[in-house]
Length: 182
Image 1: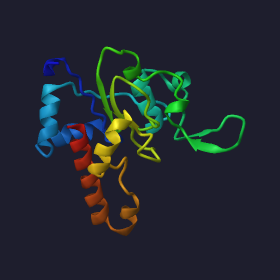
Image 2 (image 1 turned 135 degrees about the vertical axis):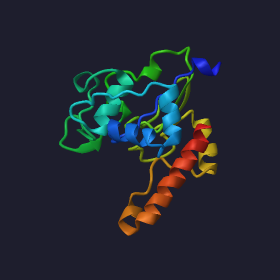
Image 3 (image 1 turned 90 degrees about the vertical axis):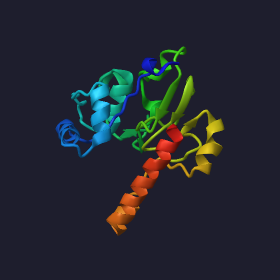
């Protein structure tokens, strides 16, 4: 497929629009400035509540929380008072990549999309994914991801020990994600 027929959605969770705009315009983020010039860069209204799991569920379904059923990072297990992390199984509306079979998708690191479901393409779910085995579709990519030491998320424990350790882990995780994407 020619590059002009491709769409790339980049979501940067929790970063104010004005901050990205200013950093790009000041030349601090030249690669982002180039993406901004070549694509569409627009401010979005967040979901209510403004919580990542709710917002991302709205982005991928085009629905509000009342329609997609995700209201936070946790949910009660039906018929109990036990709390679990909200995940893809709790989503009551289809993600856009499950609506058209004639399009090939690469979905990488979208929060609350664990466990990965079958689709036309590749899906590596993001935060909160307790294990890589069910975070990847198709499973045939697991060995490749393991060989590159792919991790679903950074080790936040490093932040309690040393900011340098944490930032090194963050950059390493990002490098591996870029390698996986390519």
